[in-house]
Structures are given as C-alpha cells and as structure tokens.
Image (cartoon, rainbow, N blue to C red; front, side, top):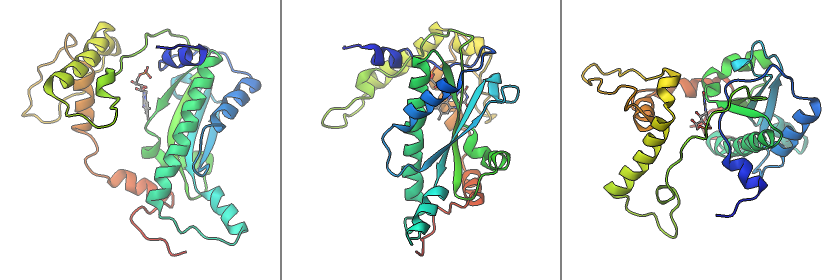
Length: 258
Ligand SMILES: Cc1cc2nc3c(=O)[nH]c(=O)nc-3n(C[C@H](O)[C@H](O)[C@H](O)COP(=O)(O)O)c2cc1C
C-alpha cells in the first residue's frame, strides 16, 4: 500500500476525548476551518458554530464546532434572485448532510495534521432545540453533529476497522457468506478486546428485554455486541428526530409549493 504524509495522517486517526488546557491559536482555527470549507460540496448547505468555552464544552475541549445543515442562508440568496425553495426537505437534508459531513471530516484531518485531536458527538440532532436556543439559530438551520477539538492529553491506539473484503466490492456486491461475516466480526471484536476497550471505558450497554439473558463479561463483550445493543434497542420510532426537524422548520414528508 502506498503511504505519504497525507495518508499517514489519515491512517493515524483516532478519536480524542481528553484535552490539554491549551487554547489553539486563531491562525490554527482559521486553517482548520478553511481546510474544512474546501471539501467538495453540493450546495454549501452548511454552517459551522464555534464555542471556545472549554469549561462548558464536552470533555472541556478548548474548541467545540457544531456543524449544521443550513438552508436558511441559501434561501436568503434565492430570495435575492427572486426564487423560492421548491426542492423537498428530504432531498435538501440528504445533500446538506453530505455537505456538512465532508466539511467536518476535512476539519478532523486538518486538525490532526496540526497536532490537534478531536471527537464527534452524535447527539446534536436529538438536542437540536437546545443548541438552537443557545446559538440563536434561525429556522431552517439544523445541528447535525458536534466536533470537540484540542491538543490531545491522551494517546489511544487506533481502533480496528472491517477487513477490506467486507467493505470494498469491485464490480458487484458479493454474497457475504458465513466465513466472511465471521472474519469481519472477529477482526472488530478481537481488535477492541486486545485494547481492553470496553473494560477500560467501564461501558456495557444493558439488555432492555428481560427475556434476554446477559451472557457477556468484559472478557468477551466487544464491538459487534455493543453496536447491536445500540441499534437493536434504541430509537425504534423516528418521532424524536422528526419533532426536532419540525421545530427547526424542516418538514420531510411534505411537498413544497414554490
Ligand atoms: C456521527 C458520529 C457520531 C459520534 N458520536 C460520538 C459520541 O457521541 N461520543 C463519543 O464518544 N464518540 C462519538 N463518535 C466517535 C466514534 O465513537 C469513533 O469515531 C469510533 O468509535 C471509531 O473510533 P476512532 O474514531 O477512534 O477510530 C462519533 C462518530 C461519528 C462519526
């Protein structure tokens, strides 16, 4: 495999959840933002909010970016040109999510190249109303994800990923046989177990269905069981997210009348 400094920086990525009490300079913040901005975009349907209030930021990070899907400012441009949004909000959110996400990951990589570490927080959409109040967001701006960033005060190992044959499919999607699935699960689970990840984090998601018996200890509880317990138990209804979207002015099942 070819490796150069850019690829090396990407391969060394790991989320950082402990930060030094050292504030990155304005120049550093500017570079991270600009590198983020230069990501490919569909419509530039994003805005980035920044908080330097480390006392209140998650993990006391010196920087907290909240990356939002933003149709508001685009609609200001449209109004200036005498247009109204005709595209439905589901389509806008698909494109806006990508615009925001590619930007966010560019910021992660740029940060890392300057010696900063970071970690995403996925709760933003579920607390969109709270974030909207805090930052006085206009309607049609939806907080997608938060990114805590600062100089690392920990040095965790890189976390495992699926083997290539479970993730890269050339020319056609293969039939994933038992052996391929088992190998992928083993690579993830053994990787996390070798790092004693969940024991160190003291985190095992409880089983909500009393009919299911707990058979796992920290000796065998690992990523595949962890992730199954998340999506096998949490948020069966889209209600919470739909409500948050509605409050922010996004109505995903409605036709627009331009
Ligand atoms: C959309 C998204 C949401 C995430 N939310 C959280 C979070 O709320 N808390 C957290 O500690 N890590 C969060 N993460 C970080 C992942 O847990 C982490 O990237 C993953 O476990 C792989 O580990 P690595 O980044 O160290 O390689 C999130 C990552 C993404 C992409």
